[in-house]
Image 1: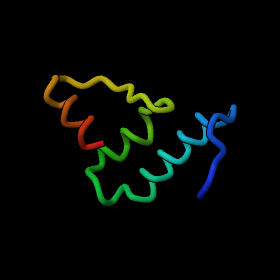
Image 2: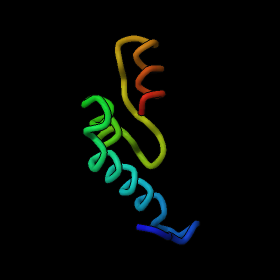
Image 3: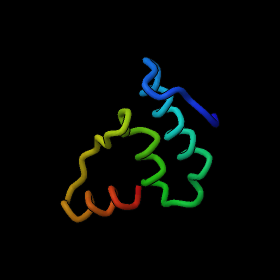
Amino acid sequence: MQVYLFGATSSPSCAAYALKKTAIDNGALFESEEASTVERNFYVDDLLKSVDTEERAVQLATDS
C-alpha cells in the first residue's frame, strides 16, 4: 500500500493491517515477543497488553 485516503471510514482497519503486515514482514529483526505483541495486541493505534512489571512495560513499549 503506497497511498491511502486520510479520513476514510476504513482508515483504522487499513492502519491496523499495515502495522501487522510490517510486523510479520520484519519480525526477524526483533525479538519474538515484540513482533508477536505488534501482531496480536494492537487495536488501531493502541497497545493493549499486560506485563508483570512497569520496567517490562516501558521496555516493550519502546522496543515496539
